Length: 185
Image 1: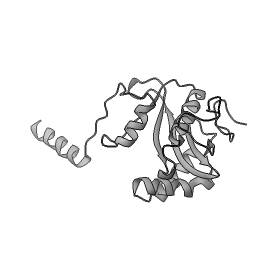
Image 2: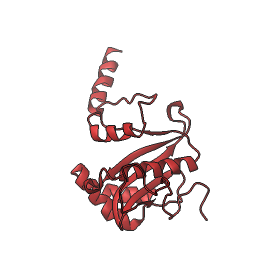
Image 3: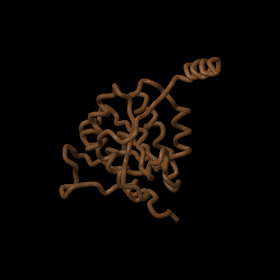
């Protein structure tokens, strides 16, 4: 038995009166929870888009996110005429750095052949619906500063800069900084 808010195998019902999102074309795009059988197509899309083949990574992701019954984790694919055209992964994160529970999109890719047909929009809309069913009202993501394609895409959906600033440091540099502090003390 599925818990409230869990994804079902039914297609997401995100459409206007004509059955299509603005800019979307026939054939119809079906958004549904990912299945283990989708993994080779997900890996292939990611490899094409990123230029890196990461089979082990995606196998681990499928184990952690592929079960639609897992609380707070979502893995959706968009299908066009039986072919996986794209995917999105997200999860609900609670109270990190004082933030109330919110949905995080941490991976989205659309096969270049299906871009500008509404696939990415349909995937984000499906994830947003899933986040709402999970009880959250805010969706966030983080992306590389120089990834103008995905930045433009998320901005076109109304996403703006959020309240947090990501910080990072190379761990080798951190070791040097800590060493310098210890030698001063």
